Amino acid sequence: MRILVCPHDMQLGGSSINAVDLARAVRDLGHEVWVMGRQGPLRQRVAAAGLPLLALPERAHVRPSPAVSRAIAAAVRRHRIDVVHTYEYWPLVEAFLGAFVPRGTPVLGTIMSMGSLPPYFPRTGVPLTLGYGDLYEETGEVRGLEGARVHLLEPPVDTAIDHPVADGADAEVDVDAFAAEHGLLKPAPTVVLVSRLARHLKQEHLERTVDAVARLSPELPGLRLVLVGGGSIESELQARAAAANAELGRRAIVLTGEMADPRPAYALADVVVGMGSSALRGMAFGKPTVVVGEQGFSEPVTPETIDGFDGLGFYGLGTGRMPVEQDPLVGQLTALLGDEAERERIGAWSLDLVRERFALDSQALRLVDWYEQARADHPPARGRVGEAVRVGGRLVGFKAGQRGQALRRRTRGGRGASAQ
Image (cartoon, rainbow, N blue to C red; front, side):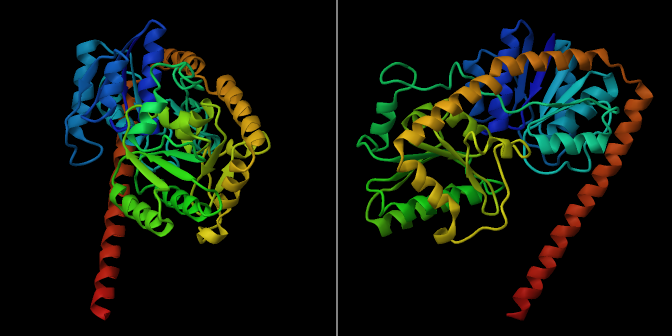
């Protein structure tokens, strides 16, 4: 098969990394695969995988972007693409309009992000893979499972790359060089968090982890948080870390910036904090992992708690964010950092779980089966055009609702300012 893969973006986020890793694994099964994207650090991963990269227009003034749809259509024609595989909602709609509606080229969409389905996504004709159980069930209910195929595809982990690192056993993962670069050579209890430093979904779990480690530091000599990533709220987190370090009188919170290969950080950890794919990668290194979600949620991933992650994936929603003094994350980190035997027990179990349930190779085999199913379907042109009209109508309503909400926020802000 000839497959075109369209990641959500070319930043170092979980969904986009998954897109490239799965593309490489499908290519290794004997298929021809192209990746399409803009500029961004993920291009290094695409190049390292030996995958051909096709350019997208650098600026999309509106989403869905007509220019992106045209670029996808041109790539489909030029490379005689059999299936277009998109990640997240806007690329799905752009490929739907550019490849599926006019040509009937099969499009398969993968959704790894949290939250409910937006109203504008295609209800028929485009099979979907969903990254966690609740969204899988919701999608089946909305679509009515007869209308289009819906599959569960949990985030994959390449266990050939992400795996425990014994001292000096992996030349590609130089933990000592990483530790020396960031002033971490002195042995100390270490919590690691690898994440995009973004406001949406991420801000709370980043701030809570910084605050929890700062709170614990007086009780655990030398305790440090290594925070890996870059993004829109990096300067805010740097300020938060600087304030915590000043109060503690030492460098307990360390921000490394973005890393194309964060494996040395995972390998250095005693405990990993994260959500989604970053939590799974920590587990692949045999590290005990605490999932920190939103609204005060946090939970270690253990044999006793794993069933609770089936619904929302490695994420969760609590009943409300609490002050750090009452945050359960503090107690969870205390328990893990204070019990080496428990860390080893949970770490070994975590590694086995990832190998058995989330291994990249087995996920790629399932994906190829779904590509073949998509190719076997032949929706008639009339049905494709009809669904495009319905998608367009829902998009107009969605955009109008967004503009209305923005206007109401500005109006409330103006009233508040004039009242002061």
